[in-house]
Length: 457
Image (cartoon, rainbow, N blue to C red):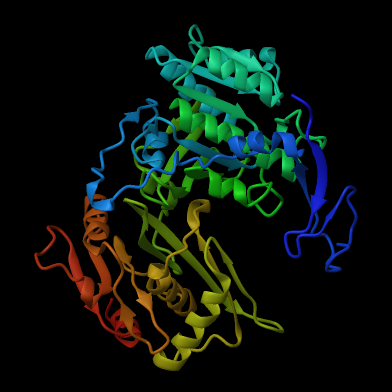
């Protein structure tokens, strides 16, 4: 097959040029030219065939006639990994997993493949970054059984597809997609065109053959997946590996999943035998204080289907100059809004105070259910008065000072009661219809009520 000619086209105006240049010759925009393939007229049919829809043929169906079925799952044997995937891998599904270098992506996937191989599942590990000797050393260090695990150290897309077609594995890992290149393109591996082309070919193969494909992706300095945005649209699931490389704990978060719940969270601990799932992750995010301290409040956040108890710490101190507002694990702009609500509706001003808020354990809280816990921790630090022991709080605080309900309030309360918490400050709309054994629940409607309640403790 003859190589296709490479051209550069502008997605805005459609202008093309045989050579890359900074400015589009058509519309004059800068840095808009993208590398594409220009097929000869004789091979136009081949090009159409190569980019056939991944969903299958164009057979017309009535939606009412389609009988949905539950997709069978391939269990990896690593409970936390299967949780994030929605119960396991799906045949023909494509998973993209990204994370900082050295955080444990290859370690986790090697552990999963070894367990699948021991369960007599046909697997294949394709390494484009490490040699076979390096992977063998890692497997020996982790004391993994690698008897039935075939390894291919290759970066050529055509050779990888040929091996996949010959072995027909049930699960294949490509580590990583940025190192794979297609001979049909002249650009270097990792370029936008190469990543897009290779991902499209591998995804189409997975859909046609039923192989569950796991693609490892690099991330940018900002933490986003490197390469074209279309990479995340092509795949079925997108997982992010989070955590500090200097810490022993890792979080795997699903931000897209066509076969399960989104925003599901898996918690791992890095040990000398690899990554180990953490059965009680709430213990990671709760500090152990010898005595009660001011500025600490525990809240219950919901990560997918899992409620997690997280300690919110606040430090309020007299400022010398412009007051600072700093958050770690929480949204900084929301902190400024909450301080304004606290001043306007509860009469507590922090305009001459530095305010620092931290979510313990490196967890990131994106839901507004943390609002009430943040304000209670701030007031506790400002007054230098500890909150009651074994108390939790959650609820969204609106600009009018109202405390709004949060989803799955019952599950949050039951998780807190299971871990021994005795007191809960929650939105009135989340108040349980039946009493929870061993827990006193105080429903609140406004932030003024919550602040006034603190005076009685």
